[in-house]
Image (cartoon, rainbow, N blue to C red; front, top):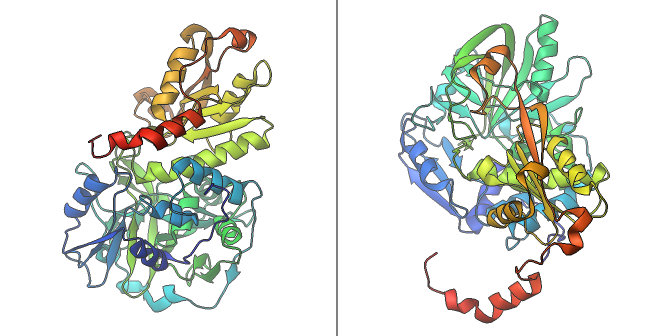
Length: 490
């Protein structure tokens, strides 16, 4: 079955998603774990495995009975289920299917405000506000504290233009009524925050720390400026998303979310946040003053589920897996929209957090085609933040295969002739290569290498043929003699 299969998203919220994952047989339960070490150890044990289980922690030490945490959503067959596709699709087919279904024509269905929903089953205000009762773990051994916000997104409103944003910004627990909200410069939430602060006003915010997996996934990607992610989710599901109004700020809140914190970010209040083990596999951001939410209200369902998506770094993890599938599709669509012809494949490799190292294959049509493709792939909306290396190669290379991509780079490029450098590109504070001086100056920029690993256009007909098999020969080899590998360890 191809990636062109029509998607069917079979769930409407996190607990319905969990029921679907249980039907796939991919859920494990861990009882009586502690938040200060055990949950982080489980994350370390399973998150890098392509087919690792979803784990639900219940009866967590020190937390009310029934309060749960869900870990490792996007792995195994459930990653396809999460996006509404058949479970047998490869990751490349899943990415192409996602692009074909949801990005080639991006449908918006405005959200619908309703009076109430399951999120209002429990309403805590005043002295009852206590974020420490939720099973927020210490994820990595050197982290500076507990993080309630990893599988999270925060909803804000532009004070001038009125549009809403749902962005994924991590949240550290400081005390019963204070949670960090770390927004990197240039992201939509930070833009909103800057506008409020310039007016001398606090920014109203709701932070969803347990909710619809689709909302978290889209919150971590690059939606167009002025676009509310929940209207995109409505387009994906084919119906308006039901939302309620926050009782403090009036901001829209998903009616069937699990746990929501509501409050204000004040311009004159920051707390030292971190350090936190980041997606680059380092504590690059260190500990520094961070904006915080003064939590005025907590809403949660009965037996609420906290969603945990911690970055593990130093190789593929859950965060890299979902970004690879969705960001690759986004960049391919960005390139197509920009007029780059015959883009065959795009893959944002998991080993770089699906941000730093991208492979692109094209069918060359004219001189400079590879340079055009690489430049746009490096700086389009889906890739501008933190990308470092773009390798462009011919259509015979499967760029989702890291070894095949490196092979093409080694054999079809010349270091002096084939590499172009872009200076002053947008970088992430999580990049460990940012110098102390750049951090001190607030210069969050770096260079990007565009590597042309295509057969040189002007003598491509004379370029030696490769001895790699055609897709048909490779398929025939697998079908006829693949059994010879049965039972052998990898």
